[in-house]
Amino acid sequence: MKGKNIFQEKETHKYDDIIHLPHHVSTKHPQMALSDRAAQFSPFAALTGHEDSIRETARRTEAFLELDEDKKEQLDEKMHVLQEYFSEKPEIMVTYFVPDEKKAGGAYVTHRGRIRKIDTYLRRLLFEDGTEVHMQYIFEMDGEIFGDTE
Image (cartoon, rainbow, N blue to C red; front, side, top):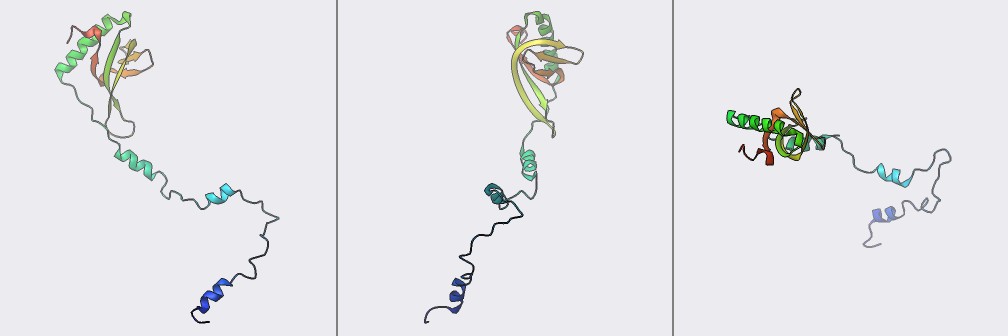
């Protein structure tokens, strides 16, 4: 036995006594489905929600820009024009701030549509498509009806 390792010989014949026996099937327990068997070996997230937290932290928000007096006055004039022509259901474009629900800041969004209602009590504009814009967050208003105010 020159060149053969004695341990290799033992290893190759280690299961000779049981290798050809039939596979055991339990009479007490039902056989597990292959998909369930595979699932027990799949990786798992040890820190549930950790990736979501990292993604949320990395998400950027913009700061709310405080308007100067000139800009506030200009928007006030446009609001009066909008109220004057409200019965015509004018189409306008509004850029406004949407505060973020989870962290400081938010995003500036532009929406175009026809005004359904000007709610002066709750200080908001309601569009025909259901969009609601709070007046304190309006940054800019544009449209044909404002042509002579700019």
